[in-house]
Amino acid sequence: MSVAIIESLDHEGRGVTHADGKVVFIEGALPGETVVYDVTKSRPNYAQASTREVVKGSAQRVVPRCEYFGHCGGCSMQHLDAAAQTAAKQRVLEDALRHIGGVRPEIIYPAVHGSTWGYRNRTRLTVRFVPQKGGVLIGFHERRSSYVADMRHCVVLAPAISALLPSLHELVARLSIPDRVPQIEVAISEDVTVLVFRILLPLSGGDETLLRRYADERGVQIWLQAGGPDSARRFHPVNAPDLCYTLPEFDLGLAFRPTDFTQVNVHTNRLLVRRAIGLLELRAGERIADLFCGLGNFSLPMARLGASVVGVEGSAALVRRAAENAAANGLAERAAFYEANLFEATEDSLAALGHLDKMLIDPPREGAVAVVKALGPESPQRIVYVSCNPATLARDAAVLVHQKGYRLRGAGIANMFPQTSHVESIALFER
Image 1 (spheres, rainbow, N blue to C red):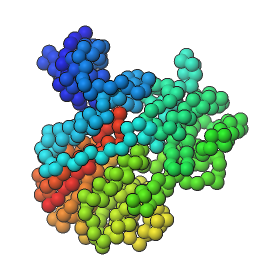
Image 2 (image 1 turned 135 degrees about the vertical axis):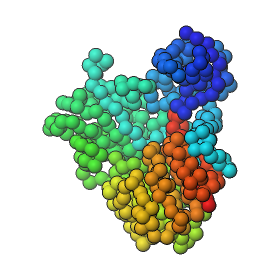
Image 3 (image 1 turned 180 degrees about the horizontal axis):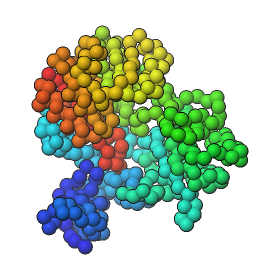
């Protein structure tokens, strides 16, 4: 047991202090607080700890809304005021750019943010059958553990998803294979709710009857997934509408499968798309590349505004979905989509896309280092980079600024995951 004054927050939302010549990361502590803490892990250069008592609290400390907070690993910042969460994430971004990339943005953009509760329109719930703990457990993993934090409600999930949790416990418990259903993926759109049950053994006839009855009573679709994400298939009802999220500002609807990657926060995504389109300053007739384009989240708004868009994505399924969405929205002539492994991009492969006036990059957590290294002398004058990992954004920014001659004109966060330490961000590079 030790006492410390907390200096800052780290990128995982833990309080940071120094003691005995090492950095100490303390769960549940906030900057400026004096806390009593217990060390849970000690290494030569750092230690991990948990807060035992807050002796002097921060003015930004609030009472967590969820009874599972601190046990469930889904959230890490419910004890911090929402505005302070946003400021902390902005600091994480700026620190990463400075310390990892050696760059500073000329402008800090105002944060993009929306609702802080009930925002998650999709989630992946872990399921375990543990008789000694009462049977079926459903929820997120416990903090820093592979065990399941059993949940009967969740304040960050969309209310329609949270409301299903008690009945899902009962449903899985009644199946003949409760120990062979490791996961339920949930996705909702305006009028559709889909539950994807990952199953490791075939269902019995009785199981199928239970699932059909549940779908009918709850007004949901049930899909079954026996293998990877592409194996997911609609089970009941067979004839049912597709999931679809909208971008009203651009008069767009984008259909998707429940296992496709889409942003979990529909409203903040709309604001992020608006920000990205604004930073591109696109003009009708320009030719723009959308790399890691997914199912067209940024491509189709650009096409709607009159640009000619070439989208590149590593997933063949998402390429098909993007092309289908372009056709469904009357944009097939302005948007073309291609499958390619952008983690192996070369100067020749990028040059093969033809002349590009501007570029948008939206990679996964690994970033886009191969893409930025492959940019040649004829690369676009303006690049908008949307990132879900400040560290890889900073690494790639270093290449763009120090090797490719770009300026980091501005950067800012999009608070896509309130109550968590996840940092989504957007940056503009120009030369």
